[in-house]
Length: 147
Length: 147
Image 1 (cartoon, each protein chain N blue to C red):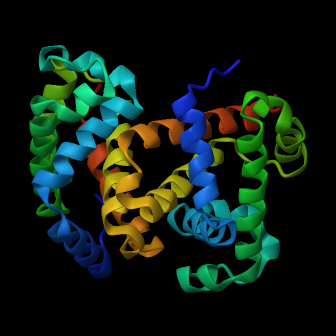
Image 2 (image 1 turned 90 degrees about the vertical axis):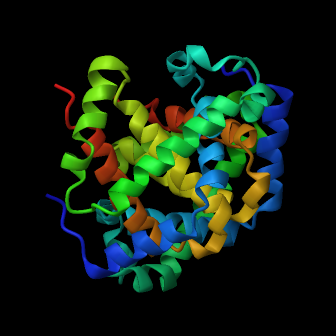
């Protein structure tokens, strides 16, 4: 089980409170599809993803990003139980969606970078380190049902 | 050989013309040592790296950060020859410094975060993708002489 200090808990919550799920959610997903284009293979039903402009305007992309961030809220509120919190989601991504678990790390990087764009110097090195620990724990929990 | 689009060339050159090497170099390198603490093992001669405050105020960290940015500039100035440009540096990191090449992308990730926080909205997904590709080519070239 991951151990969290008081500072780590409060830093993660402080970062999370400042995030506008609507604004950041739509951006993170567009970044993943644009920066790591092979991830588009999972989203055949999303319509036009053929150009960067299309991805940036695609409503399904934006909605999916917001959905992912809402799921991240569960991790923020259950930092001591992430594996159990994400067991069902992990199984879904493994058995039904057949998503390569490396993709979780790519998404985690895009979330961190989107936050850096928004917060700028307010994401200090210490905050980045704590956020990295948190998001790595989320990635681990999402990979936990892969066998 | 890597093929660069005009957009990618312009985006990379634009980023490097806008950033202050001393500031960004220090920020990215100190973040790497803070967020991925095992990387400190390569810098035993740098003095006090015991905590984030020490790392952030360490003058050798600052000057090494600038050295790294100046080395990256060589790649920016000759984007069609990055492998050749870094052949010696690659051999140095492999044979003399014995750096685990997985660490190159950790520094790359920290640099991306610093650039993102400096450029804010201007670090669009498209620019981010170009920067990611540039870093991937740099890392690949630095790995070339490892065997």
